[in-house]
Amino acid sequence: MSSTDGETGTVNGPAGAATLGANLEVIVIPVADPDRSKAFYETLGWRLDADVRTGAGVRLLQFTPPGSGCSIQFGTSLTSAEPGSAQGVYLIVSDIEAARAALEAQGVAVSEVFHEETLGARFHDPGRVAGPSPDRSSYGSFASFSDPDGNGWLLQEVTTRLPGRVEPEATTFNSKDELQKALERAAAAHGEHEQRTGRADPDWPQWYADYMVRERSGAELPS
Image (cartoon, rainbow, N blue to C red; front, side):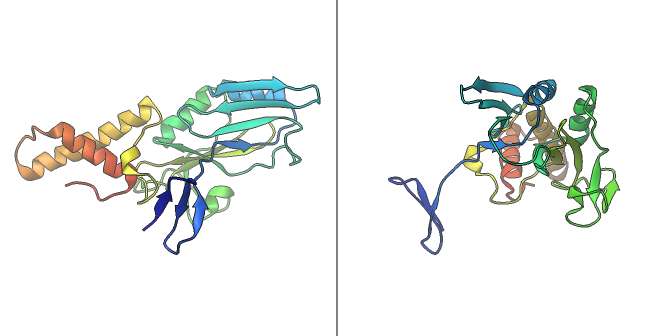
């Protein structure tokens, strides 16, 4: 069991060790031309949160993907990393094929959907197998693309979270499409539930809600 210290905001783990409760909100990526990168991420439809400059030659731009709790920053004099050296930055989507099609429609060069022959193949070409995961398992299907500097982005399809990744009391959906897909899966599962029970379920809204929260948090699904 773990507990939260309301005075300090720390979380005390099983062994009594204290860790700081924190949210990952910004990732800095290295780019060579801020204006070129700005145009690219605007093309993706990401929200421009800031574009500020100082007299010391510093420029900071911040973009946030739709529905994301984490943003990216880039600009001038923000990092000493080589442009294009950010690799394997994840973008989680609920429908890998729809996400890939949307990127392609925006003129982005994106890989075909693939799955891994061996763990780790998502980060390099050898070991990638064409097509989504055969059983369309959550976490199993990928696609990749790069920004103009070569910073590498990795799309991963997640429909059901592993246990403990999401608190059920704080279940959220990042977009209308993500919510729609969850409702469609709940509807299909509820149809099977009614077939098993042999009767119509008047409490289907409660069943849907329970299913969607459990799926999101990685808990055992209702039958």
